[in-house]
Length: 310
Image 1: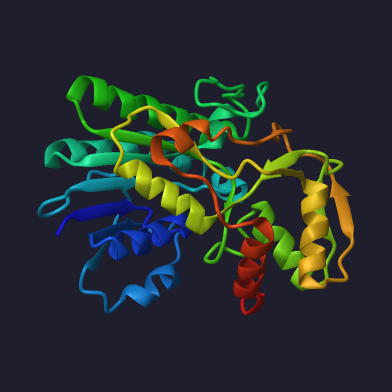
Image 2: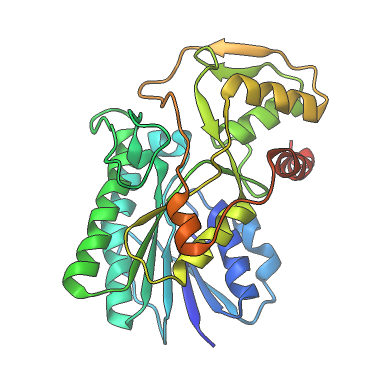
């Protein structure tokens, strides 16, 4: 039986990835310090004999006992609220945490997969975003703590691949949604759903013309798992390329929830991207991957999950 380690294992994506790895026959070791992770995301695994957990801050030196075949480095604050409140921790987990996780991969001869982000593209001047686009990032803006942490993590990952010959992969994750998101994590899907379910005004920043694309979590995890099994080392975008404006998205949430909410327009945050949409050509060619869950289906499942938590 192969063993996988998932840092950030109690997070939204880390917990879904853990479920997929267990389904694929892996033994899984989760690592999390619960700075943004949630113990409830792992509650269903308490009697799973192939799952174990280490409570630890991966920004500090870590050793993992036994054989390890795969390491998924998913530890990081990932929502604007989190990384604006935890700027130093965000920078440390992207730099020191990535270094420590890569050190374990090197010592164990394990494959390493970095969870990077579409934020590496910043406020893009190229649309849609392909992996060879270097981005338009403000390194000293408030979002820079997350953007540059992930850009550094990618550079460190490629250095370990080139210099130490570690088998590395990099996934650039675009907007993802689904059950287990935190209701008040500052991201648009839980924010809009939470406000709609409470019939509160839905907060749209700017005039709502900025665009996003939304990938359901099962599709994302499928792409990430396939990438982990692939012999390719440069970044790969995983996301849904169907694009819509934030205003359109808010209106859809109101319709699907049957809410009485109106839209409240607020000033646009600093460095908020105007467009965000992945070019997934590389993922299609390399992995035979494309998203299969349509937005309506995914949102209904997500709304159902949030109904008992509002």
